[in-house]
Amino acid sequence: MDAVWEWFAWLNEAYGIKLTIFYDDYDRRRFFNGLWHTVALSGICIVLSLLIGVVGAWLQGSHLTWTRRLVQGYIQCFRNTPPLVQLYFFYFGVSALLPTVETDWGGQAPLLDSFQWAVVSLSFFAGAFNVEIFRAGIEAVPRSTVEAAEALGYTRLQIYRYVVLPLALRFCWPALTSNMVNLLKTTTLAYAIAVPELLYVSNQIWSDEFNVPEMMNVLLVVYLLLVGVLVWAMHRWERAMRVPGFG
Image (cartoon, rainbow, N blue to C red; front, side):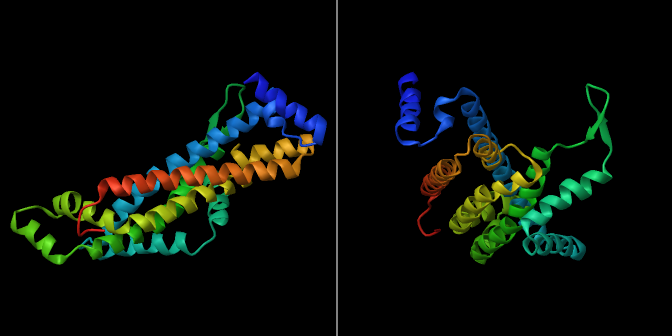
């Protein structure tokens, strides 16, 4: 790899294309640390938002009126407010109401750090959309299929887990893919609360090295690759789940 790093150093000397993330050890560590935080943040939020969507869609079918109202209130709140406002609400508002913890040097620190609040906020944001996506998939499952499961003695939870949800997932997968892609791109908002993700560390690098055009182009290419990998994985998963007649 040394030959590759040296080539980028030569590119800077010969043409002024300053990609320090390839030939400067410090910038390279910062950049790949930011890439790792972006991937970790996206992965955790995707998993949590899917769980929220599955549970929320289940609760929407509850016989209890107040349960349905609470779920609907959550959906309306998080779908109809900007994700950046939600992020600030959790980080500055909710965090101030929680107890603090003592640090190793005797000071006080928030109970949750910026990365953890970004996970909470973005998961709730994407989860609100996933609830409605799963609900649409559930409504697409033929009623006769549910009645057949009831005739076999399945409980409501068993019907949802073993019959309705697997079929609904096949109907709503394209919409889920779009929402997951949107979630990955929305992780850049974590920059606003100093989460050291890709955009945040890139801003630090171009502030130090004065190579804004180069870093902006690198960011564009990296996010295209991340989204491309996510879409490829989701499409592979969709094909693996395909059942004739059900999406």
